[in-house]
Length: 318
Image 1 (cartoon, rainbow, N blue to C red):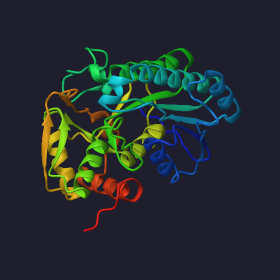
Image 2: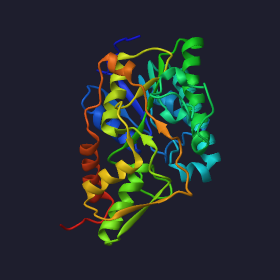
Image 3: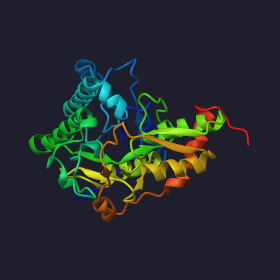
Image 4: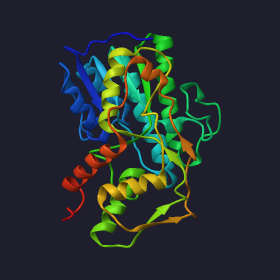
């Protein structure tokens, strides 16, 4: 169901504004005639129920976009399962209930396509949720995300709250986490390949076989989709956000090597996990509503690498 929600004149709270998604939302919302409010972690620990309830009561935003999360790649998920489950459960439950208590008009909760079964039919439709076992390497995070998106649906049913949920595919872009111990695949590969270039290393080691298929969405496209959904969507079913296109990890590494200018080879550590073999979101619902991603993968990677050179990596001389 579509329902126009006008942002003009509204106060919008972006939870998680210091993260990659939050930063993109701030850039996108600057184009709307709304007031954006944020709460730094030093002011409000989103895992602290009393603090969240008090802040929301005082701030009384009209709209809330929940982009706050404890996130990471396979290594981080495998070594910090308690953090990924507890932190995300607490943040989701606290923010959703606080929004209900404060009379928030619209809330959008940001999930992830990792909530779907490991072997879900591809491309993955929204109805595939809870139809099979999760991917073991990220089940802790996925369980917390599932609980919160179901909480949004429950609040719609019980309280009539206009709370919705969106599930983006794998994200990348400015503000990403490039720490190899906790990074997702694109920033991890970018950091590895960049380091190999500046040190003239002949090879880069990659986890797994390079065969898993993944879909990637530039974070600025995600922010645009989230604003679109806030304005045009109101229903219980969560909505997938993606490009509808996929690439193997091996081909992704080769594309990054071209963007970065690395001429070496890749060696695959087949003793490391691949994760889900294929993960492509069915984005037919969102496209039918009139939204499509605008960034090609190569152009998005080039823009992200330019940002990386300016903000993270050591600049490479031609």
